[in-house]
Image (tube, rainbow, N blue to C red):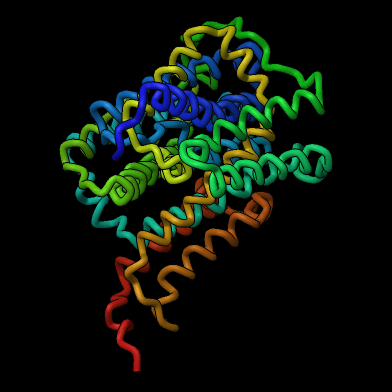
Length: 430
């Protein structure tokens, strides 16, 4: 890694700050809407999210896995919560009961993650989550996120209607980010994400003035169990526990992919600390009403776009995010950044995830038989993603959120294929 100037380190830290901010700002807002929380509680949860995310990312980079990988709200957990909240009325459950069940399940999953991490369970996970399984995970994760970001940048707020003017601006922003990244000279291309966010924000404010900011927080930042008091909703607890175990694969996938980028190996000790930290963050999330945490594999796309791997840069960005949560007025101001702008920029950054998925299997030669090991689970997951959640309403409520989640089902199917099919016997062609 080449030595960076102080100016470059500072500017790159600000770019990391905007990347982390854009990734997390929409999560507490959408979860607050799903649980029908009052606006002041949503704003307070956003403030808590900034503080915990910044601190979590800095600690992981300093004493955990020691890579520049954002520790943020898990996409797996986020999708699961939104799905269960949406289906709660049809299942005859109140949102406070669902929230209390999640609180219990997340506490349990967090405690188990800490224990398994201390027992070095990561070595077992590494045998289960082979490079092929990780590639399936990255393919499905990138597909899921690109769909979310594409809908967001198109201004599709109700799932049906496209806002043409917003869509046109978002497409221009996405092209700008891609053009700067590909054609920008020297260090300019390394700051394509930051340039896209700033230019996009200014352009949006100029073309569409008057969009409504997030209200300032009046609720306590340390509110305990805002979703509902912990209870014994066994179905929610079971699904939460399973999701927590699968979420541990985030660490394996993200760290293993980062090893390729950094050209270094991660020790079992660093894996152990990383798992324990993620478990602690999950316990804190349950207490404060936040989506549980995990290393973001999508950070790889950001690193490949910027080509700046320096850990000091990442720690600066995480520290700024934490500071943002400690100064509410700053958070209120930055929360006025249009979500469509963030989605347009992140869409381009996350295209790099496909490259990370391909590199995991670049030494595998596929034939007409072995292609099933990558095609079947990936296309199964994408197919489920494109089925409306209402289609699964006849399934038992215990397994409905699990079966309707394309990412989870695709990864589980991939683990099954890699565990029970001897693919080496099919690699010899006539």
